[in-house]
Amino acid sequence: MQINKPKVNMKWEVPAVALEKWDRTIQAAEKDTSATINIYSTVGEFGDGSGMTAKIVSAILRNAKGADVTVNINSGGGDFFEGLAIHTLLTEYEGAVTVNIIGLAASAASVVAMAGDKINIASSAFLMIHNAWTLAIGNKNDMRAVADMLDQFDNAMVGLYAKKTGKPDKEIRKMMDAETFIQGSDAYDEGFVDALLGEDNIVKSENDDYHVTALRRIELGLAKGGMPRSERRELIKELTSTPRAADKTTPRAGQDDELRTVLGSLLSTITK
Image (cartoon, rainbow, N blue to C red; front, side, top):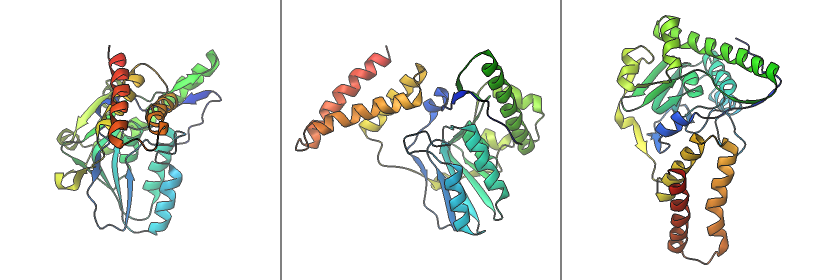
């Protein structure tokens, strides 16, 4: 299905509701596979160098040369166009594609997940489906064009989920309207996935220190307040770089104390 972008300034964002449930420390335990695609960030590149893109996936698939591929997903979503492009690449790939939802597959990441020949999910993981949404700037004609485009997105997603589950379109649309989070066993029972993934396939990264946790909370607060992702990232970059740039000879403990004070102050302001 081809969907044309309207000529309007549009930005894609990970929904705040997805950010709230997205534990980015969850990763797949390393396995001996011919090719692995780890989607642990946003879907699409958002200007800060992070994000999984169709270009990256295409390169991995070319190097795999038809061998079986495993796609591990823990992502809050992102750019629908990029998610649809990755979905197409995976469905057209000549080798077998196994998708493992190990943390969260929300929004555009759930579109990618539906490309698996076999889809597994951890019992503690979530699939999240919702109506497509975006930030757009333009006149009334632009807004109508954007609304028409979002209808096409929703129709495309309904088709993917209905095909996988066998559910009627009306039921899928109701779930999307409600921004539904579906936990592992429920996703299996409702036909969104083919099997449950053993918890021994999941590990937690070791970089979830005070800074990372606090920064996530800050980003969530800013997202709920409506601040665009690019501005959130720039603010966080300033917060984390300024104390460390002040004096390279300052011990790490001193830097940590200063950063804790700054982060704590901002967190208290956000959560009031």
